[in-house]
Image 1 (cartoon, helix red, strand yellow):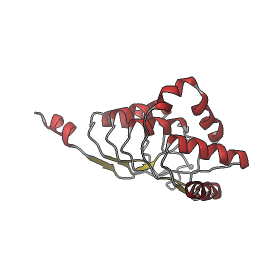
Image 2 (tube, rainbow, N blue to C red; image 1 turned 120 degrees about the vertical axis):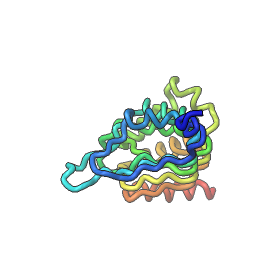
Image 3 (tube, rainbow, N blue to C red; image 1 turned 180 degrees about the vertical axis):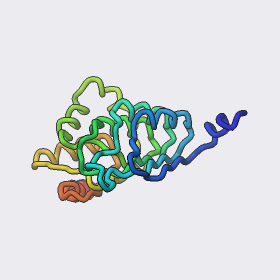
Length: 196
């Protein structure tokens, strides 16, 4: 076997360090997909460096995330960069369903996704025929979701829709962590839901 062939089979953990101007996009994630036995993928990058105009480092879309998670079904830990407040990324909550059904062993997750239309995105997942087969598949047992500084703005019906959507995607979800007050409120409601 060549060294690359051995690495394809044996590599279990891949961690990258943070550096300025680093972008998480399909050109970065495509080569990683050959390491099908990865258990941990940690892309350590931050969106905010001095003089960077508050750019978001995540340039993945839902299709990119789908391809990555289909290729890496043994993942237990997936960190795709430090989550930020920019809400400019093109991934949506729809990518969470792909992650849940393709990475059944997943225990830790950090991923950028745009929360601007989170209520509509989650409702679309539950009603769109394109997601019907995915909705019926087994899902991962992720217990908590860490949103860090991702923004979240919800009214009362929005809280209910997001709780329903998130628990449909992650049936074992017990709480969320995030700096935005809406994530804190969402987490408190999830905890109360699990206690009833």
